[in-house]
Length: 290
Image (cartoon, rainbow, N blue to C red):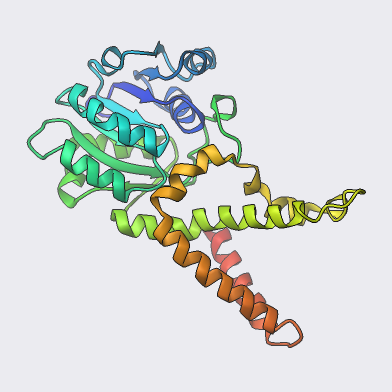
């Protein structure tokens, strides 16, 4: 059973992540009332799909009234813009959490807006679960199952019963909570998630510029290229705020990756390249074991 501390949930942003969270709550928890807030056309589809019980749009106050958990699944810039109003309207007993892909700037804002004596509590979060296709149409109740869910908070926050209740919800929907600091998160996710996205964009753009009248080389593409370029299907609108709020990490990572590519080019004619394949194989095995 989920502790009664969280029985009324409001999801702000009912796209892929927010919609999936709502569907997961409906599938894996009981006695949970789930409201959603978004643009009219999106919230209507989320309601029709059964991701939420009650749809809200426009004024934010009615959506947050009496909420035990406020789950923000909006783009980073929208979350930063809306956070002061959420802090003002959130019930004193509520836990406020987000699902943004970078944490440093958001954590800094939240520290100012949710002081320890405020009542309502903010907990940074980031589900490492997503798809190259966005929107409520692609939401899935099992999106979080088996995937890490980063949580950003001080040790005092971890001891709060509202946080404990939320962690139990995450475990109930199949996520694997992992506690870490905001800078540590942004560095790690920059290398493990954001850099692969930019690498896929670069490779796709490189190939696109070289298409001939017969569609070569893409007409000879097999499953290997499709797997490599899956991330290339993600829209810029999804990644704009992520890149802008983690650009220092990404700039350094791209420099290091460019050096590695230079090293590979220099070793093309030697058997030394075997060591690079061995290291890549070991990392692949590690990823498969997680």
